[in-house]
Image (cartoon, rainbow, N blue to C red; front, side):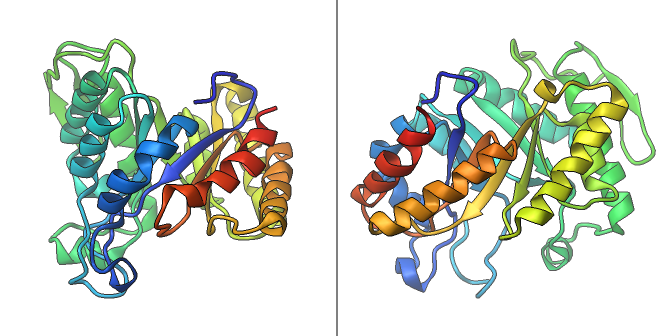
Length: 295
């Protein structure tokens, strides 16, 4: 794990889906047996996506996020744990707060609450959840975050909001270290300013455009400045979906990309490598990309 705070962190995103490329075994299940025991000592965090079914076939195996991350917490006791990211509307805010404080307690303060406003309308409706317009979902997310922080810090917190309320919602034991909150957001009008207001960690997804990333970063920086928050109050993280390098040329390209992104202020890379079949496939990335960036 990275013990130097000025050097980039690296997270491994393990897919919860099983599909024809994994012989319909959930990829995280395979990785927990064959890959993660070898690679997690080199990584700082382990991330699990929050959806209920897949994007190709709804019948493909797809594991629930909280259950899976808790299972991973027990298997890998030395790595931070985060959802990528929870849909706020999938669970009542007080339940989210209680589950988070419980996992923080059981994991020894390794849990990060990754959360966002939610976007996948078909999934919400299939499960019988409301899916209001984006402005409402973001206000609901903001209330969820406020409720979480109250329930992590007060013995009998109460809150009356536009959408949610709690009344003496005790959630013992209170965490000795409140979980950091990672907000996944890319929307420039609402999402990014909200992340600047409330996030300990801001996460967005790499879409291949440096210019777009700079624009989003600058919106967050401007809002931090307006609020009087320090840049050091928030960590910038970026999710990249890319296969592990197979040769020196691919390693060099990966290193150059992450070096450039580090210069732009990215501090935590969340890497979705897809479905590698052996831990040795990660050796080249660890040696030729991660190690030089940590020097």
